[in-house]
Length: 175
Image 1: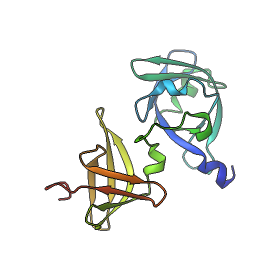
Image 2: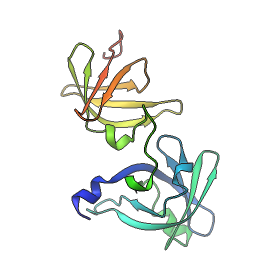
Image 3: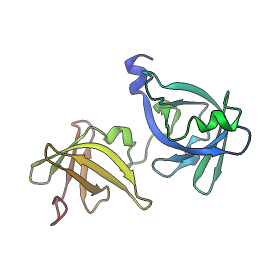
Image 4: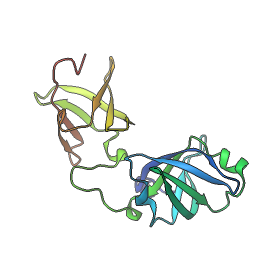
């Protein structure tokens, strides 16, 4: 896949386990809205040791208790479904509805620099964690790692054009 096509993919979720006897898989959707996958026809699975994600047709999506149950074309047995466990699911950005104001795809946040409101560079967003109630930024500096809740109390602004997240470092947050 060309680099521009790779960049158009959005990290959407992770396959958590197989489901049933027909090769279905359960997928946890980062951001907590698996129903947005309903109009998508193709997904891409990140396979370890492969440069390109594996493209699979999505033949059916069921939502059950805030989890998506996916039927992928060519994944027809529990054993084949089990091989997909813990793999990331990517979706073409154009196949998804754009995020609402003050909402972001995780893939847009990873790699951004994080600075305090006073201009001090804290580090780079390396990952996010879904804590159930809100996302948590995992920020890596040269010396340590910080976890900052991605909520308005701590995150003042997100500037995607300049690749910067500005945070309010309340006492104890950066220790």
